[in-house]
Image (tube, rainbow, N blue to C red; front, side, top):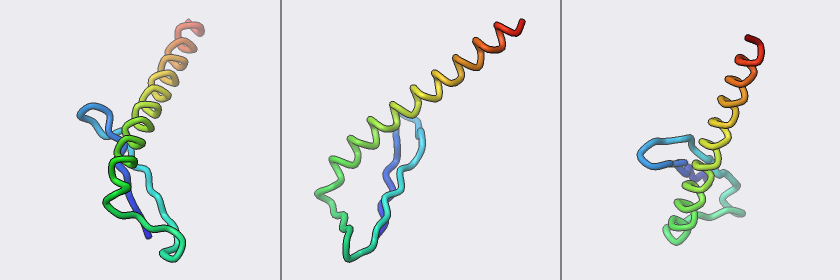
Amino acid sequence: MTCAVPLVVGESLAGVLLLQGRPDQVKFDESDLPFLQGFGGTLGYALRQARAAELYREQEAIEKRR
């Protein structure tokens, strides 16, 4: 069983979370959708913030070298 959860922040896609497991152990249905969408939004936001922090640190390092 596989489920792909889009990591959406605003209008943009930050990534995709792939949940996978054996069909006898993992089952996804429509009742899981609200949770997975909320989780995907939260995780997408966190991913975007981490990327922004990384870019900021890289820019700081460049400025220090100058």
